Image 1: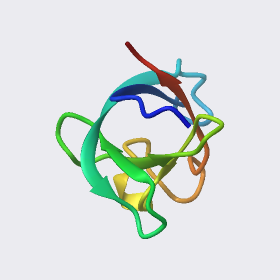
Image 2: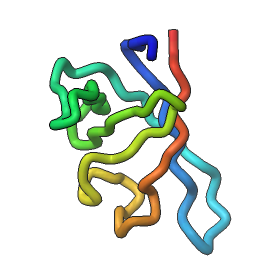
Image 3: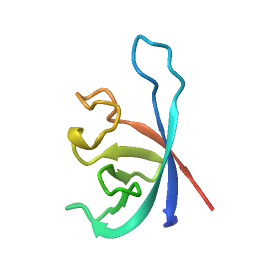
Image 4: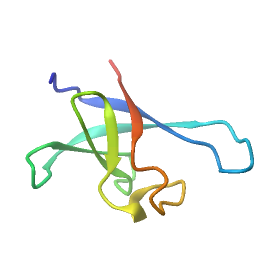
Amino acid sequence: MALYRRYGITLPGTTGRHGPPTVLVVHLTGDVTAEGRPVYADESGDFRVQISDDFVAQPLADRDCPTGGGGQEQCLHAEPLP
């Protein structure tokens, strides 16, 4: 997998409210997961994800997910950014 410095992560809109999705930009942090995958975080550092080879972002903890967690947003689309 090519190592990208930043990604756009698509977060779904609020369930039941038909809200539009939100795109959150995450940057390479220099940290790695226990599996050795790079960790990406938003500007605040509160939303942290690992990104798979097929561009799926997985929050490192439910509490990290800005759309509420609770297991709904475990697989998020990640788009490499220039």
